[in-house]
Image 1: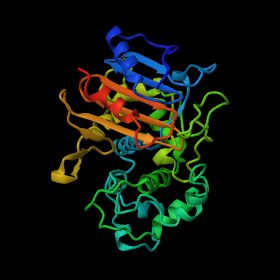
Image 2 (image 1 turned 45 degrees about the horizontal axis):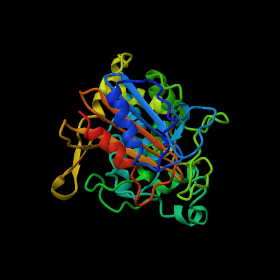
Image 3 (image 1 turned 45 degrees about the vertical axis):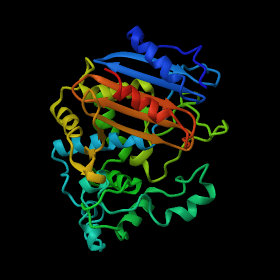
Length: 353
């Protein structure tokens, strides 16, 4: 179980929330754990874990978000649309390679399809696996660069007609990133910083490893460390790294709970846009999605969330629109079947008044 005896609390918040986080932390077994809650901008942060604390407090380390990077890609797209630089209905192939011959279904894939996992593309390109399997537990993505992702998209044969079925796809969101870079003439990393990270004041968020000692180290299930994630050409789908405090800032901007929430109209409009439900799927259409968040009902209103995992880390981001409540959580152990991390973080979001 998690050792919480030395868990620092960076912002005390309320005693009741501090007790809630300390109790929740006992359910998660991981070398490093941070559970962070914001209520209308008042933050409570609990850190712990089975590993010895290092010189940098856990809540100040940058953690790999994996698929929880996708809300950043979604907010970026929404802001570019609000600025009139692209449209949701723009066809990706036309922006990436104008005039290049592609399959008719590929020609119909729009930016909205790519972001909402309705493009018909598989989770990963078919030719990804031969190079990835030999190094699946160490570096599956690093040998598949951006130009190869783009080529795979241009020669793809979608499984379904775009817009007809939902299928989660790291491939599609990665293509979105390359398409936005091509449409704006700006590298993805620069574009994300200019349009999202800098306006929100996310100084401790990046898409590459930081200086030595500032990034959390992931672990396999047996506790052995794993190298930092190299996402290769799949940057937009999973490369973001952030401190738990920056994660709260990002979420507070969506809830309006922070005193310094952005007021410039393009980003304000984008923050509203990404919380609006746009599709339903599953049995009896029970699952609701916005442009970039999963949406579930709760006793206290709808919750929006996204989880992510890498070779040795996990992250959870969630908030309740209009309530000022946000939850960010990070852990440094690879996900496994009996893992309680996501359920614990989700419970903080859905079971808290």
